[in-house]
Length: 137
Ligand code: SF4
Image (cartoon, rainbow, N blue to C red; front, side):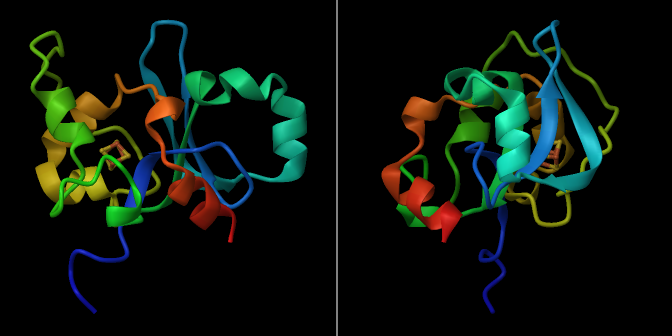
């Protein structure tokens, strides 16, 4: 098995088959959960307003590499773009996160990814149909 495969996408869709990774706090940063929480139909029903789901929560799912429009051909382009922003304050504390061992962004950028990651709110319009379809299968 190649090292680049079987990674987890830390910015996926809120749907059955994904896991709940964290909650977007009123301050705009993400509070991560130390253990993965499976997204169930009941969770989606309780969460309400599915239109804003990814602006209120962060979800993880399998990284589908070239099936996602954020794939550059060899890595995920999202975290590089995030870390290029000069507005992200430095913070050396690694959040307790349930997916670090397989996280795509951590595998690419190490601890710096986790610092930038807390400021990321998933932009659903940038997630492809391929990802939506693969995530539920
Ligand atoms: S970048 Fe770090 S904090 Fe964000 S999902 Fe990956 S391991 Fe967790």
